[in-house]
Every structure is written in structure tokens, then in C-alpha cells.
Image 1 (cartoon, rainbow, N blue to C red):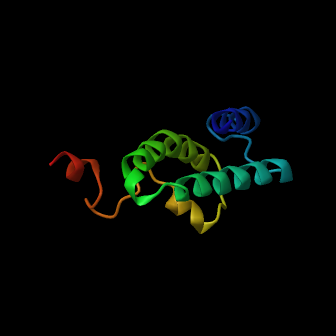
Image 2 (cartoon, rainbow, N blue to C red):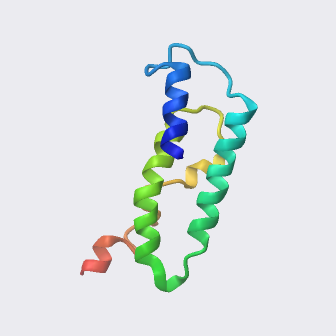
Length: 98
């Protein structure tokens, strides 16, 4: 669904953004809903499910970033959307493998 919305936005504004305009209310609500569901899903993982959380961040987070790149004026909470949500190396794949 996230990629479908991104492709629809691409169709509306052009691949290079030549027809940029403010988001309609429907698009804004959809983007807000995606972010809320993404955040709730990530928060649902327990401490013993760190690997699974990282996998979801990698798979779904990349799609969310593609959507984020096509929209301006998103809230600061979108800064939390990362490919791997770690601070430093704590909990990262590097630490898991060592």
C-alpha cells in the first residue's frame, strides 16, 4: 500500500517533481495513517524480538523513506523512520554477529 501511494504521488507530481502541489486531505490522511500504523507495529515488538524489529525496519522502513522523500512538510516524527533504528552499534547487526 505504501508503494502504491508513492507511485500515485509520482503520477500526480511527475517523477522529477515538475508539477508539485500541496497534498490533498486524502493523501495527508493516508500518509498520517501509514506512519501511525508503522510506529504502532514497531512498538509492538518486545525486547526479545530485536532481530524481528530490525528486519521490519529494514523492509518496511525503506518503503516509508521512499514515501517520505516524495513529500515535504511532514512532521518531525518522520525523522524516526530509519532503515535500522539503532543508536551507534548497540543492538546492530554488527554486534549480533560478534
